[in-house]
Length: 410
Ligand code: UDP
Image 1 (cartoon, rainbow, N blue to C red):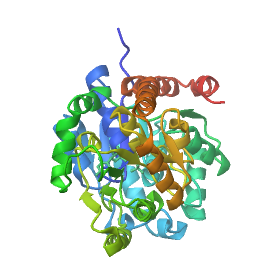
Image 2: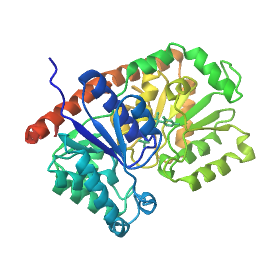
Image 3: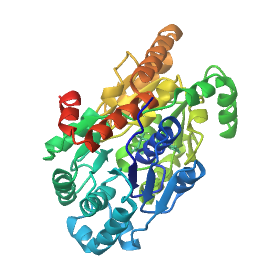
């Protein structure tokens, strides 16, 4: 019989559907369905994740940060955080109460780390932090880096890093907490169902943006992800200038207050030289269907990506993928073996790589797509990933985290 996994209080600062939240959702659902886990999720904001979890029968509670704390950005300063310390203390107390009948507190985001670590201390519960970010100055202010790393070092029993790259960045920033690397996991059946109906989805999506179905001409490049300068959507638009006839669809939105960047993208796309070839599809919940319309999926982050869920999703969708050659993306893609890489921030290079994919002989293209699909199945299968997390939690809860470190850390 499979032993019941520890009861986990998951904690996330947002209920928007970013990569960290989608990872949490998948994990909680598998833990419930396959392991009968009695977890609870505490969110620090209302939003779509709340409804998704509740409708799946997950015990979900929302405690709000005040408006002023919600607007604190990752690159804001430590002083702003201290300014909201009353809020943090109140929330930590509430989370500690929610954790009374749980085995472990599991912050999933940076602000949740601060609240969750304090709650763990108050409630006398071990804290395991799921690190989905690159703790570097490209993403966080120095003071926030220090705050997060010192909090983890002092109050967190174990860090689950979403890639070797994010683990390395944590160590480089001074993190000393024992650590295990667990990539994000994915359900193959969701993607298989859509690739089996490739032609239907491709036609529907091309129709919806006014592109005729044809074997040559007007190919479609697709970029999936929230709008943020470091996600590099502007590089994809820039690359389009060197790709006559090619169309670009941007799937996503400014989820975390990046409205200025969104306006900048819209202005760039309005350039008459691009001849209405950029399509803004907004934030969508049908990514596996949309991917079927992509002649190539492009990941174009200009800073190292902690992991890059969209890259794996493209591989499982059996679409060719080009990823920025940095960070976690390089742990997923081997250039010209299971995908392609391009220099981050280099629009002409990206345009050349897109052209290369389009000009590839069909057999070679299919070989790369098959290798990508197989590597995604081998390395990122959701249940295997969740089992690795469960095993880590069992060892932490039973006080054997040093065993975890020996097993899974270099
Ligand atoms: N995504 C989505 N709808 C959109 C755009 C993106 O559901 O309109 C999903 C995408 O499929 C992926 C996640 O958002 O699962 C983004 O994760 P990733 O690791 O690529 O980036 P993050 O948001 O974590 O920085």
